Each structure stands twice: as C-alpha cells, then as structure tokens.
Amino acid sequence: MTEHLSAAPIGKPTSYSRVTLSKIMTAVDVNLYGTVHGGVLMKFVDDVAGAAAARHSGGTAVTAAIDEIVFSEAVRVGDLVHAHAQVNWTGQTSMEVGVRVVAERWDSAEDAAVRVATAYLVFVGVDVGGAPRMVRPVLPETAEDERRYKEAEIRRAHRLARRRAIQAHREG
Image (cartoon, rainbow, N blue to C red; front, side, top):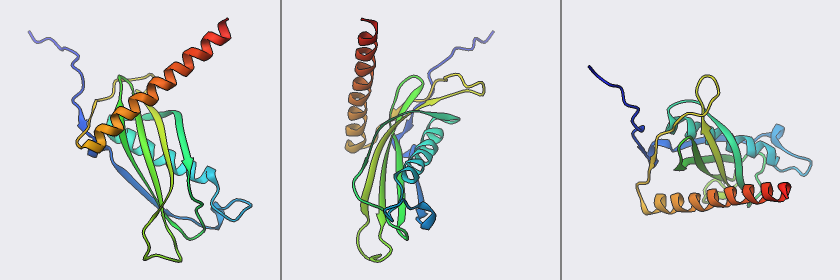
C-alpha cells in the first residue's frame, strides 16, 4: 500500500527563472513629449516578469502587485530596449520578481547600454480555477542572489506592515 504524501515542491536555482525580452521602440510607443510612454515600459516590465514567474513556478502566475518601479532615464524612438527579470524570493504561493530595463541608444550603438528602469513585482501562482497554488522555492546561487533574496524579504515585510497599518486605521 502506497501513501501519497504532499511533499513540498523541489526548489529551482535563481538562474532557472531568468528571462530577457528585447524590443525596438517605435513611434507608436511615444508620449506627447516624444519619449517612450511610461505605460509602454510598464507593460514590457509586466510581460518579462510574468514570463520569469511562470517559468519558475512551472505554470500560470498572475501579477498581484507592482511593489516599485523607478524610471531613471528616458527611452527614445529607435532605442533597443532589453528587460531582464528573475525571481528574487518565493513564499508559499507568491514570488517577487526583479526587473532591470536597459536601452541601447540607436544613435550611439557602440556605447554601453543605459539603465532606464528597475521594478519589483509580486506574482501569485494559480491553478486552472484561479486559486492560489504552491510555488517551488527559489534557491539563490550567488552572493548577489542572496542580497536580492534578503532585500525582497524586507520589501515583503514593509508591504505587510503597510497593509496592517491601513487596516488598523480603517477599523479605528
């Protein structure tokens, strides 16, 4: 007689979740100021983060929160933009994905890519019915991965503390 025990999923190394998406920005991507619209970059960030979350979790993962997005440089028409994502931290059903966006300037292709944005997003693994499901642990491989993991735990603690403080304020 064999019993089926529900064992925790086997973890995957940080590198397993790494995804890069690249896109040349065109005239349809610009805002009234002639630079690429922040919303275009936000969608690009969500796309690459979703791919990393799905890869790591082995199935569907949905955006639960965008914890932070910082735009540091404008993106222009013609720039080749690369969004790099990886899972930084995992809980039972949720994951933090970090995204770094860089641009290769179309008019100075020999120069180093410029960092244009960074973001942290929270994803939840879901089953076919849309209910949260367990996700496998992420296994940091390098000192940089360990740093990202620990900083993700700090961001999570701040999110939870903010939620509790808002609830307490509303209740009383």
